[in-house]
Image (cartoon, rainbow, N blue to C red; front, top):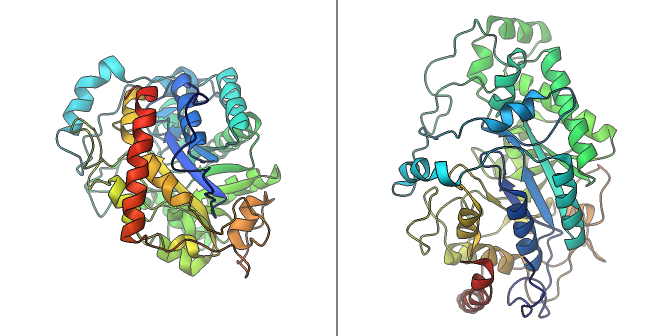
Length: 440
């Protein structure tokens, strides 16, 4: 798919518009659905048209593992080919999303993994388009697929799972999805990170760190004893231990670790944070002052349904519309610790390329419209930029400290009614230009 025969975009780069955000990210979850290589390439081409320059690729999770790791062949012979999870514990869903996804999956959903050669193709295309890929290996939680293949890295087989919900805001039963701190688990983490850094030449590696059910470690007498011996008063120190191992490996190769904001209170290390806003979320960032990417789950998670879109969408609620994205308050990007903005598409109910396009468009245009604005702003760490924007834009080599004066001027946290109206008109016109091209 090429956009070369289309007129210049009406939103995003061009037309005198500039962006103050050096990190303009799009995340695609290929762990829950192994989106075909051709689909991934089309997403990259679409993202490039609208000025996105970071592709955060979520490659591992409880439901699948998507790249080869030498010495761990079961990750791609077994963990890559798990049956689709039905996600019956999800409750904030649009209409009959759960039932329709289950019914449609046999003819549409795909599993598998990306070969080294396929990854090279994706990396090469991204580079040609001016997009840097940030691969994600999510640990120590969300590791059920790997644990199923290598049970020695997870919960001891003779230890019953704890009862009750593992999350406060919804019923979430315990599962064998947490790495246990042992040499086998540490070895797999190292092998996976070394491999992913060989496959992806970019500056950043995302290592997750989110949604660890501490009750699971607490229910193991040996973990309680380990905590006592080390003087730890909370199992989150086990999570921190894993993350510090990953951070050391990544920094040893001269790259920059990225984590989800869940882990911020535990980390002393200087890392780049994907701030999605779960629990304390951005409040924690105010306290710990790590550099971060604004990734608000309420308005930038496009696996939420579009209230103005096709009623046959499958996804989460409450939804978010083009209007909602344009009217959202973006206070954080005015913070010198904010490196940019990222929108995400999780794939629990996104079964194939048609679903990807249905959920991205036209809302991706609204995100681009917020990222690229008319006025005197600079992007990519240009002259006068500093703080997180300058560090990320200039290709920081691992140091993310406090911001300083001189960041380029930022757009207002909210748009005026006139701006919202103008952007909605341009988004609608641009969508009409590209929808046939995209097969929508």
